[in-house]
View 1 (tube, rainbow, N blue to C red):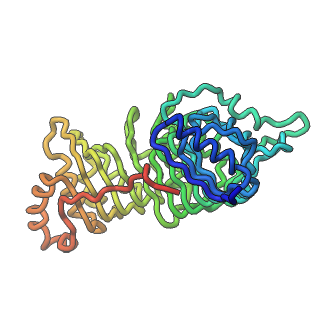
View 2 (view 1 turned 30 degrees about the vertical axis):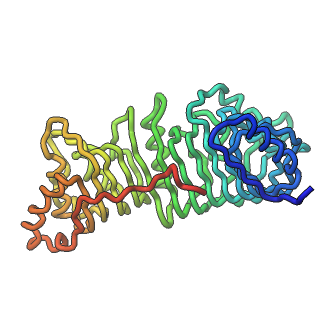
View 3 (view 1 turned 120 degrees about the vertical axis):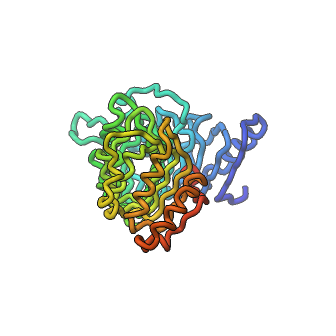
Length: 382
């Protein structure tokens, strides 16, 4: 039998003949493979994978993970699980001779978990985490250990899952990516991570305490957590009212917000003191007795360098957001680029020409209607 250490299987849709062929290949070489990269649906009969397995990418929706061959995690450095069911449990990765205690991924440096987005939770949190219960002779709760982890990506994480951030993680990591995950108020409680090079997140409020969970999670990721190189956050809030005064996003560098009122822009920018790029998908114009954006002196404290506006909802009030933009342009001397809808740009250009003499920073302002697309988090690979 040839010595096969690396296997890659790709399939666009389930096919009986193809699935049987892939299953046969995997079963034949499972005991010697060091690298498995598969997005194919396969039924596997092999009892275990190689003890030297270092790289594993596998889809889990056709077989629950409990039906896969036993995985030795001692040398596993890269793990990517796709379409993970809600009843996923880390207890599957226990060694045969280990029934209690922590589960240790001693060499793992990259972990990517994508949950099955449309699947409803069928297990209670108590059932999901029953392996974590302390034994009769011990008061300690078992945890998952990732002492060498550098990069973590989590997608479509449901409210109830065995993936917990109070497990053992390094205090510093290279990259964190969260996409379309539900925010829970206690999600990052007792999380040991303190700093990260790059953070990308798209989070959504959910549940009875949606607002509390949203601000608790985001204030950890972009406030308590120190980001040394880059941080990017997509806000697409549905079901709660956005309140800038609840944010503590001191380390946030790039923000893409789905909807924001003209009366909230200045308050948000004053609270995100390191923000470089602001992307606004929908600038919502609302009439208010007091619009903070007209307090011109406060704009001088804003640090944002580029503002991108790709859409506008007027709500029967004409061009109020243009007025906010004018106030920003006059006093926000940090501003280097302003990119808006063509109609907005054409309205603002004569205004800029008029005030260039009194506001020299406007002479260097890059003003056009070309929209720079933000980061597509769904395409970020680990």
